[in-house]
Image (cartoon, rainbow, N blue to C red; front, side, top):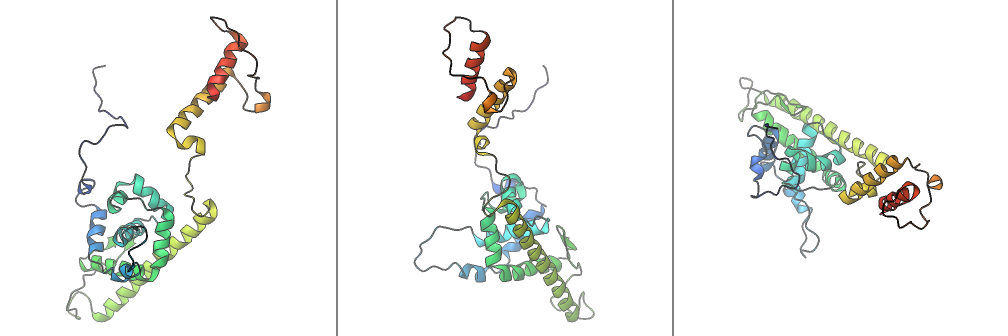
Amino acid sequence: MNFEFRACTLDQPLLLAPSLQQWLPEGHLARFIADVTEQLDLSAIYSAYDRRDGRGQAGYHPLLMTRLLLYGYCVGVASSRAIERKTFEDVAFRYLAADQHPDHDTIANFRKQHLAKLGELFVQALQLCQKVGLVKLGQVAIDGTKIQANASKHKAMSYGRMGEAEQKLQAEVEALLRHAEEVDEAEDGQYGKGQRGDELPAELARRESRLKSQIRRQVMRWLKIPRNPARRISCDSAGHREAKPHGKELRHRWLRLAKK
């Protein structure tokens, strides 16, 4: 074959540590969300973690969690389980999570613990977007009328109109947070608390187990052996020491291989 393909081995090591900043194009929404959240005042959330003794396991940074939630809700990902999964599978989420992977319980608990403050922060974030004239942020609609610092009836928006716009943004944020809570509650009921819902069976969770299971199925299919243990051919008989096994002995040897 004269055509050349690029290498695609899954075991290829990274020779140099990649930069997170190289993961996304310059104009990506996730970059904008990262910049916006840097402007938010998270002091009220930080204060909830104050510990004078310094004990306790290090937790995920509130800025990281805020970025994930705001971006997720803006692009229509309300489920904490889906956000957890996307920190592995989606480059934008992985970028905002700084290549860390909080589980869905941690994400949901953060939202519940700081619900009121997150609502205020999300409104602030949308207002920052509104100030630069954005009509929408992801899937979230924003009044695109520019807000001027010295607003008047001759400027872009009057003070009365600013009050209406803020109320609209608050209602939008409340709807997003309420929807996220409903989705998490529904998935907790469907999959069970603490379960992602996409776990592989134990025998398929590890590569070695997956390969062994595949070999066993292939051997049983080749030998046309039923899956019901009661109907399987007994493997307890002593093997014949023949140079070229055949018939029943050959089947016994394949069965022993499949069970290893």
